[in-house]
Length: 183
Image (cartoon, rainbow, N blue to C red):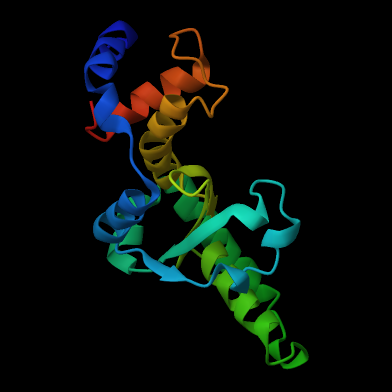
């Protein structure tokens, strides 16, 4: 489908593409069997540069193996295989890690690296999701979240993206809307 046609569909459905943060969470729970978890278990979040830690709304985890099998592409699966091999050849010594938050965090990281878990962290202004972080290579989830989130950002004027076919971020958004059946 060409971009002009996508733009026309977008203009006609624009009002239906505003998803409040609670609706996004419900979609993720239903479509991907995502479950809420305590984002404070992710010890590196306060020092990360993607999200404003004080505005983090929620974290969700996808761990269902059947769901994960349908999310990861071939290159992501290969990266997981390489991580599994590397982690078996150079195992983390859990006896040296204190039985506390650090142990939980390291288990989360191993599960992310080896493709047994995808974590999604959502930032919010109180009404909409303003930013997100997908903690593992998962292009499918990144694109899906882009389709869910950008419409509200555009509607509120909270994005640098211009509703113009010359804006690469906007055309990426349009393509994601089409790919996932929103337009």
